Image 1: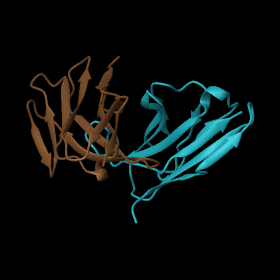
Image 2: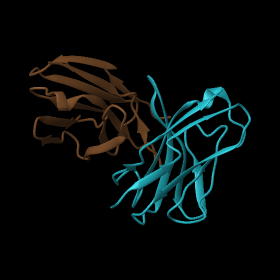
Image 3: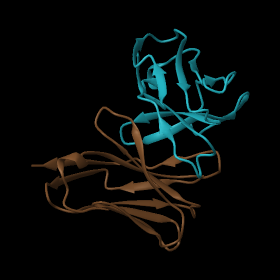
Image 4: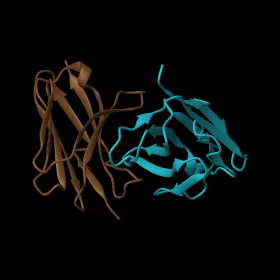
Length: 114
Length: 110
């Protein structure tokens, strides 16, 4: 089944404790992206990757890192999480650029930073 | 940068009634996409509009792209409980980015 998977689905952590949220897709998509969803703000793009080893900042990149060492994986790294990073995070992928191709979203990761 | 505004933020609808949600961009869009997110779920692609003045229908959903390609609307007729969720519009400020509106959250009274 074609899908985007994220792990963990739920995470409660404390300020400053490094964490990684994994994202994997099995559709051989070139493009992958991370969004955070907050009430009243919709989905805001954090980082995106056009292909292996090619990443760039979205609209809200501060406090996050990403890497794209393999085509299928695009982990989101929070080196020193803070409470303002408490949010619902979605990974998405598409075969081509998002301006023309459908985005496929993962199930989401709900993160709470205490 | 490009801003995509969406109204209303909430829409409470009586089952069987119609409603419309609107999306406006500060800049001309090459295309606009609509997504639906069910409660507790993830966004799912509904449709993409590309041409000026384009109108597309999916059963009871009608999507429209403005003549100036700066606004779009989603009209749902005869609302059903299956329509519950949040509807997002999204436009690309560049080829590699996608800007989402804040969404319209729809609840239905049976």
